[in-house]
Amino acid sequence: MTKLGLCVTGSFCTHANLLKALDGIREAGYDITPIFSFNVATLDTRFFKQADFEAKIVEKTGKIPIKTIVDAEPLGTTRPLDLMLVAPCTGNTLAKIAHGVTDTPVTMAVKAHLRCNRPVVLAIASNDFLAANARNIGRLLNTKNIYFVPFGQDSPTKKPNSLVCDFSLILPTLSSAADGKQLQPLLLR
Ligand SMILES: Cc1cc2nc3c(=O)[nH]c(=O)nc-3n(C[C@H](O)[C@H](O)[C@H](O)COP(=O)(O)O)c2cc1C
Image (cartoon, rainbow, N blue to C red):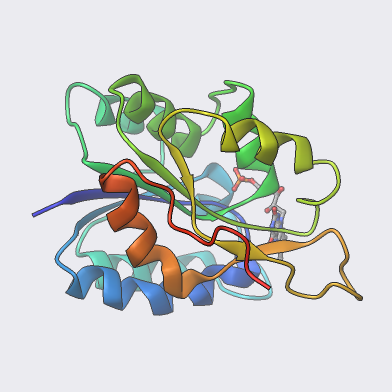
């Protein structure tokens, strides 16, 4: 069974998309270890009460999420996983990964995993990816072992700087990344 780390960050408006995609991921036979950013581990928002969202993740993965840097640190050499998925991945977390900042359970898990030369898949969702964070996407497109779930503009007129991935493409992106390949086409219309 392929061991998958599922890092969840604070794109709260896309958490429902993740929950929908999780059923297929589970059915495909992945053994899923959830990891929450500090914000996902603590914040109630207009989309979900934190406890309700966590309960759904526990129900769909069968595991209690990792919520501390200390508990995420072994996900490198001590307790290795095969693949690491960040879904959804905020602009905040992507910027940190691009610059080697490790100050949340998610960035710790990604760093530990990359250290072992294993693939990381980013499922991005943010309204600043064609603005402040565009340079960081460019940086990670050119970084070894980083793969993207294909993404596109979700609302070009109303949110011209926003990019969101297609959550239904997480599964094929994971398969490609496991083979060392970026799923194409990367850019969706
Ligand atoms: C209701 C709500 C929705 C948000 N949606 C997004 C989003 O879709 N994408 C994003 O990059 N940030 C979004 N944010 C902002 C992030 O939660 C914020 O940048 C946070 O610091 C991210 O931390 P994390 O990446 O460690 O989870 C949202 C915040 C709130 C309160």
